[in-house]
Amino acid sequence: MILVKIVSIVCFAITILTACSKVDPVPISECKKVVSHVKKVLAKQAPSRSEMLKQCKAASDEARGCVLVADKPMKILKCDF
Image 1: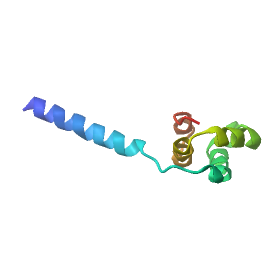
Image 2: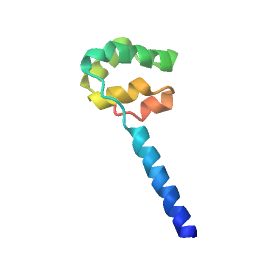
Image 3: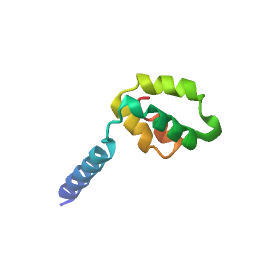
């Protein structure tokens, strides 16, 4: 009985983590939008726009998507940006 509950919880956790880790890819043409979003989230802690634009263009579509859905500085740091 306990084993069944543990397996159920683990399966649920894996499902949630998998669903949350998928983001829509964002093309390089949306870098200005991504940079503006980062500026808004990081405020005074944000690097310069030119530096972020350079990073954005070098990042993958998935990394840009990750950054665009991040709503806290620590979430941005978790993206491969």
